[in-house]
Image 1 (tube, rainbow, N blue to C red):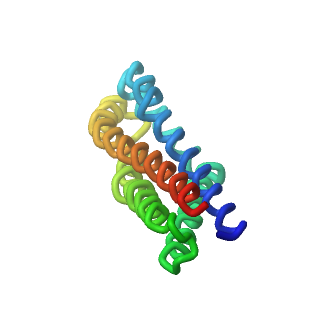
Image 2: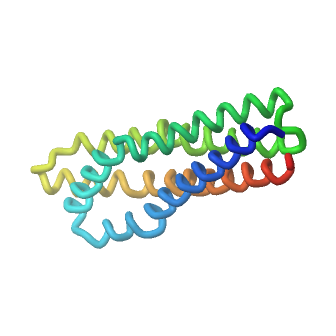
Length: 162
């Protein structure tokens, strides 16, 4: 295995590990902290979090890791990862489907609906939070688990490939 592939796998491990940590923070305590607020205040706070989330730090992390996972996937299919190929393929699919796919299909639409709620209508914001929170949290658990499993898969790919 080349140094390039080792570097790619290490970058994939770091990227998926960071993503798992970010999602875990939300699943583990951020949303519970927001739940301690009045529902309208929780909705306003999450609206602001969502505004700041779509900036370079998180977007580069999520989509840079997706790019790395895609490259590793192709290299694994081409046989460049030797004994670690199947781990790398599984990890890539977990990240691309379970993190990027779920984010785009489940979490972002919920974020957009919450963003559309009027910030001046407390009752509407409270209703928006009540509708937003359970589904968003459940899908965030999926992202947390799949990012962590992808991290494990890339680690096993690196170990298996030598």
